[in-house]
Length: 209
Length: 211
Image (cartoon, rainbow over all chains, first blue to last red; front, side, top):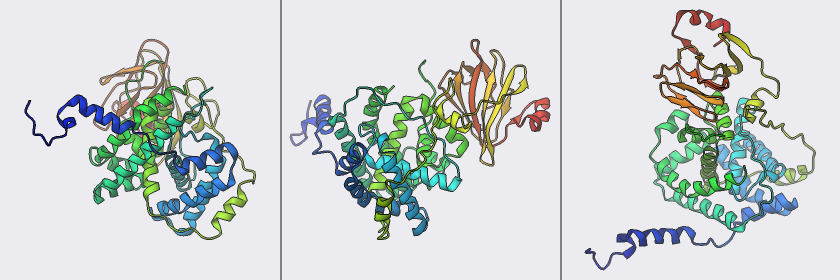
C-alpha cells in the first residue's frame, strides 16, 4: 500500500480510523451542565434558587423562541410563565439519562403553544414507568449532556440557509409536507448527529419497560 | 408483544415532535410511540434537536416583574391535568380521546364495527373492529391514511400488519385490508378527509355511517 507520509494513518487504515472515531466519541465531557444540575436540584430538593437560575437561563430564550413565530411580547410572556410553572410542577418527570433540560423544556413549550392555538390538549404518548431500582448514573447524564453539546455545535456549523430551515421546522413553522420534502438535506446532517444518541436512547428506554 | 415491523416515517415523527402534524395523525403517531420503543427514541432525538434550537437561539429580555411573579406562584395549588393510561389493547392517547369513557361501537354490517373518536375539519380518527376474514370495505382516500393495529392483524396488497404496526397509505393506494384468522382485528385509523367508497352501495351509505 502506497500512502504519502503526510497522511494521518487513521485516514487510510479503517481499523485505526474506527478507533480514532471511538476515542472521539468516548472522550469524557468535562462535567454535567449547570442546567442539568439546577434541574436535578429542583426535581429532588424543590430548590428555589436553582429554579430561579433555570428561569434566568430559559425565560429569555423561550420568549425569543415563541416570538419568532409571530406571537406578541405580552402573550409570549404568558406562555413563558406557563412553561416555567410546568417545569416546576412536572419536575418529577424529568429524566436526565434520557433528555437534556433544553429538550424537555422545548417539548413543554411546543405542547403549550399548540394547546393554546387549538384550545384542546394535543395527543401525547403514554409516560414510561419509572425503572425500579435504577440508580442515577452520572455517566449516562454526562452522555446526554455531551450529545446535546455536539448537536448545538452541529447546528452552528450549518450554512445559514440550512440552519434557517432546521430552525423553522423546530419552531413549528413548516408543515408536515414541507418537512417531508426536506429529507436528506439538511435534516440528514442533523440526523447523523441524532444517530449517535439513538442507540443509547433505545438502550435507556428498554430498561424502562 | 411481537416485533413491530412497520414504523412511523421519520419525517412524520419530526412533524409530530415540532407540532406540525394535523391532530388526527398526531393521535395515531402518539399511540404508535406509546407502543414502539424505536419510534419513541427517534421522537426524543427530535426533541433534542428542538432543545438545541431553543438553547442556541437569541433571547428576548423578559419584563422585570415576571420572575418574581412566577416565584410567588410556585406554592399555589393547581389541578394536575388528567393523564390516561393504557386500558387493555387501547393505548393512553386513545383513552385520552375517549376521555376514559367506554367505546361506543356502531355496526357497519358483516360483523364490522366502527367508533368515531374525533371528526372535524382537520379530518377524523376512528376505531375499527373487523372479524377474521372480513375486509374493511374497499376504499380509496383523498389524502394520507394512517392505520395502527391494536389487536389481531390485517393484510393487504402491501403486506401483513400486526399489533403495533403502522400502515401509511397515500392517495395512490387502493387497498383492501382484510383481517387475518385469529382474534378480531382492532385498529385505529386517521384520515384528513372523509373516506370515499368505490362500490355503489357503500357510497350511498356513506353519509349514514359517516365512514
